[in-house]
Amino acid sequence: MPEFRQYLIFSMFNLKFKKIVYISIFAIFASAISCNSNNNPNNANFYIKCGGGLNIECPTGTYCKLQNDCGGLDKKGQCVAIPDSCPDNEDIICGCDDKEYKNSCIAETLGVTLKNSGTCIEAPSFK
Image (cartoon, rainbow, N blue to C red; front, side, top):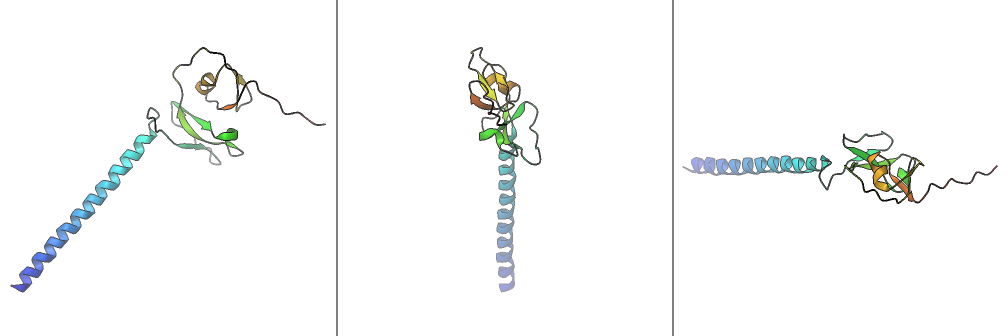
């Protein structure tokens, strides 16, 4: 009879262990699915790194919004949704492509990040 009791205890432990493993696997898949929801450009939490040394491109409907200083030497940024429409206000900005745009929204629809407000200022050349 003690052998049957040991077998029963081992079987119950084995079932509990399997249940823990299955719950853990489910939790991993659930977190992976929720992380992938951040890859939707219509999601407010959308975030994918882009640019950089590998020149990672953004999904359709997004553009690579460069970080401060226009992404630095390696042009790092994050993918953001391209605006569907823009206001008609005039608020001149200089884009990271060193071109002037009527406002920052128009620049974003063309996939250009804001460099500075106002006109583009050329650096003085010393000869």
